[in-house]
Amino acid sequence: MAKLSVNVDHIATIRNARGVSEPDPVAAAVLAELAGADGITIHLREDRRHIQDRDVEILRRTLKTRMNLEMALTEEMVAIALKTLPETVTLVPEGRHELTTEGGLDVILLQSTLKQKVALLQQAGIMVSLFIEPDMEQIKASHKVGADAIEIHTGMYCEVRTESERREQLRRIELAISAARKLGLVVNAGHGLDYRNVSRVAAMPGIEEFNIGHSIISRAALVGIERAVREMGVLIKG
Image 1: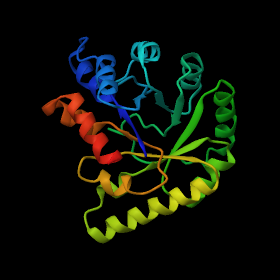
Image 2: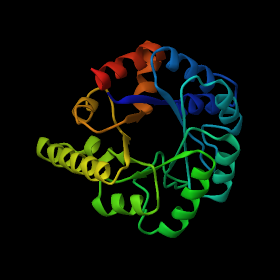
Image 3: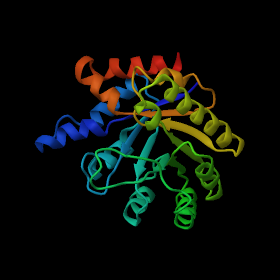
């Protein structure tokens, strides 16, 4: 049965819009855990547009489940991860002007740097996941650099408009899961998944964890975070 890690970044987005202390992503994480979340995901961006260093520090001390720290492949972020020691680090591409992560990491291009940083993080006891497209060559490269896991970027599946395109994207995800597992990689998935489209991906065997944020936080604004997390959990876990 797949796990659900709830991304609370956009609670911080709302807080930062007013430059005040509420709503607090730490409180949101507590409520998400009480509602059945198996973990909490946060993306500490270089420009600190939502999650702040303070949030990372407090969450590390207070979480009862697992922390998945999404971050760019930079010296600053690696140093923060080595100090914080989250259970998992997910390395993602990061553009200063993007609204959200726009695609997967180019592991092939970054092989040399990734191999070094992956080993460094693993030596500290951190599980390392790479956020990639459902592409065979990227999967092979992820295995080659020593990653423990991949997170399949599900954005294309979520954005297509026709059923035939949707089936094609689902097939790509299915093949990616199979290939990664054959190489011994843990498989996670996320990006763009919501209450309408997640079930077809959740029905695929082999995915260990879903990392979902925007749709849960959006629904939480209307029905509360505990109900929003529980409802997503039902869709993922059946």
